[in-house]
Amino acid sequence: MTPFARWLTAAALLILAGIAVPYGLMSGPPHGLGILWFWTGFGAAVIALILWGVRGWGR
Amino acid sequence: MSATLVWIGVGIFALLGLVIAVAAARGNTGSAVDYYLGGRAFGGMVSGLSYAATTYSAFMLIVLTGLTYRGGVGALGFELIYFSGLTLLVVFGPRFRLAAERYGFVTPAEMLGRRYGSHWVARATAILSLVFLMPYCTTQMAGIGLLLSQITGGAISLTAAVATGAVLAMLWTLVAGLRSVAWTDAVQAAIMAVSALLAVGFVVAEIGGPATFAERVVEERGAWLDVPGPGLWSLGTFLALSLPWFFFPLSNPQVSQRLFVVRDVAAMRSMILWVLVFGLLFTLVSVIWGFAALILAPELEATSAATPALLATDAVPSAVALFLTVGILSAAISTLDSIALTLGSMVARDLGSAQARDARQVMVGRIVVVLVILFASVFALRNAEIVEQLAALSAAGLVVSVPAIVGAFFWRRGTAAGALASLVGGTATAIWMAFVAGISVFDPTLAATVIGVTVALFVGVSLVTRPKAEALDFKAALADDLARHGVW
Image 1 (cartoon, each protein chain N blue to C red):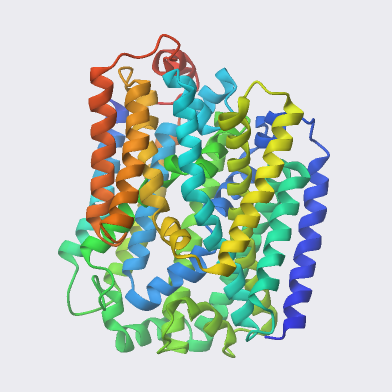
Image 2: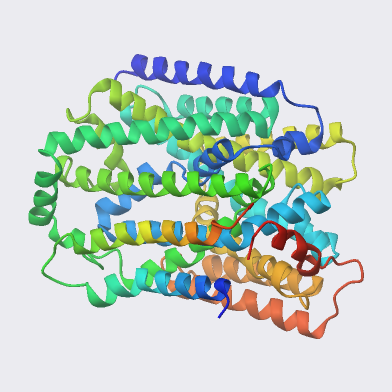
């Protein structure tokens, strides 16, 4: 698997998880801050993924 | 809040913007590339903040806050799926930049037209952008009107507020094109971020600090911390909104054109980092703001009033409330002037001629900028239903350009006929479903069908037609450049 294919797979899995985990695994009572923290972590993971994607640019 | 105070704040803001716009104009050479792209010479910070201010509009602190107020944490998920669409820049950002530099493209429509060897592809892309982005401008203008009017209890009329927004957006676009737009955008992005952070800090402190705030939300509004929550964020609605918005960085020309303006690939990397930091921060602040409104201003009937209602409480000092009002005004104007400038460039080059004299291209663009902003102002005041529906449909409508864009870089077999069929057929499908069949943008059937029809038309028609002889081969032409810049 090329580095690009690995990155693309990671991106697809991350975005899928961004929908499936809150709606599939975390939905329902008791209500707490879990989903809010999950999506905040998801946003941070998107940044990490993009940093991985652009790290070789312009060198 | 007193109207005098708001006028003073807006006056200072206008003066600051004017000084920046005039200073930015000094670098202009009068060419079309200079007017529409700032000479392709922007560094990472200014282009990144300009991209962020263009992307993150008044939608954030009015609509997203309202969606949080009405439906809870699902609003955060929706906005972050949209945020994750920025991953598309890793693949397409340098390709747009390098293709534009090599062939001299000024607009994304021009890029598609030349790639497929058909001026009709460029024209169709430009018309598609006009159809959906002009109504979208109207929503920004309406946001300015409602905000200033509601926050002053009607002392500033809707007409005066809209006229103020129109004058500022026109002025900053006409002075020096993208140079003045990008520099005022950058300053406006800073105002948006700082004012929102300050305001949210005050409301959280008023509630009793972060821990008490979290406890109160869990105790008083527990259902809002779940999905589907109190009702709005069913999985279907979530997908219906998220799916077309994910492709925003490619489908919306006012942001994809920003990929042409950076001076090199290294500057683009820096630009993306600025957008990421701003985007995540602003998203979190907007959603926290919505939850704070649930605690401090409960039981509002119109959720779009959440922000004005929160600003009207004693939680936010007047000076900070005024600063945030200017921040929201900034968010609306920075989006509005960027869209107007992009539409101006498309009319001048794609519906007009890219070979026309530079002075003529700039003049046509300036006229279009004025007309777009006047259109937005008039319809913001008239509440025309068709304009509101087209604005709501904009994300699902503009997404029809995505298959042709992806094919431009990754599928040599894609043809002009396939691209044109997907643009026209996809748009017709979106309009038919929304206006004739009456399917809501909150129904995932709409976005899924539009995307399905568009992809099928692009692939199907391309396979039964031949690429034009004058079509460009981006894949081969850019391969060496991409490798040299370390891009996958």
